[in-house]
Image (cartoon, rainbow, N blue to C red):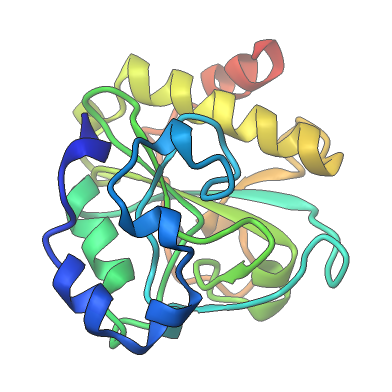
Length: 199
Ligand SMILES: [Zn+2]
């Protein structure tokens, strides 16, 4: 459903300098599953972050991937996607998971370095997943969100040989130097790891 909705700022994207870098298939409005090169995770919708908000790379060659970092966005799904699209924000994550149905947006290619950890070393070695909602509002952490996010994390771990454990699937608050608290005390790590391992 999401993928049939035009981007509100598509005109801005088309007018931007990033146009030359966008494959024409992305601009044609074809369904996500008809453009297999656009996303790394099957079923994800491509909502590209501004080119000003991440660092192009060729991971895992340039940097081996060691971590999946779990975030809670402190805003809505659409708010998160639009922050990443805003070139003045200087922030991004690879994925955003929607609360209501677990729908997944990909905003940065996995080969590129998203700016989400607040620590350059961890940024270079991780994939960042944002979740719609607020750390203090556990109602946003739905079954659908846990399940789809866990499947995404499991697939990332399989792609890069990342162990499916708490030493490698970490919260933003566990990144050295981070002053963030997400995903917070309501995030059910036991359940999440169980889902990742059984995905
Ligand atoms: Zn975070």
